[in-house]
Amino acid sequence: MLETFRVQDPAALRAIAHPLRQRILIELAALGHARAADLARATDEPANAVSFHLRVLAKAGMIVEAPEHARDRRDRVWTNVAKSYAVEPGTPAAMRDVVVPALRWAEETFRRANASGESRDDRILALSTFLLDDEQAAALVTELQDVLERWSERSLEAARAAPRARRETYQLLAVLAPQALAEDDAAAVDP
Image 1 (tube, rainbow, N blue to C red):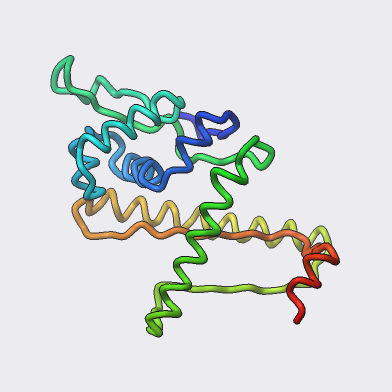
Image 2 (tube, one colour):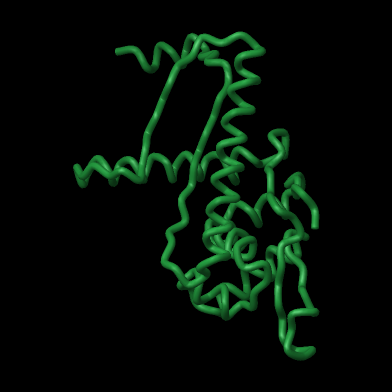
């Protein structure tokens, strides 16, 4: 199994951009291997829809069949090809297929929270500004990656230990980069 599958081609990018396929990949990471019916139960989606998405992921090279876990030759059992998946920043269409939908998700999440007026301990919107030199920025990136990796592993271990426990899929969108707004962008923000 690969440590990280680097998403670089358009087919893999389109495959990983879909929220249900992201969920299927994380469920496979938790379960180790699964059939479409298992994943349909885990995601609460119809088995035929899950089967379609499994074929898309397989065609993109992100999952493979695991015949050693099959009951017979007709039984299709799937597993991930990597422990993690990463979209390479320079991948053509990454902005359109991954970044823009993620920003829409963030906007919709907080629009709903604002509309409901309810405060929840399981959500955060944080926009922080730092004054950093290159070394400090690199250290912060490393620390953030360590926290994300630790929580990813922790959540997968809990899912493996209690596979039938009710869980929701949470997403985190993080961007750390120099704040270099063009003058036009800054003017559009200022009243």
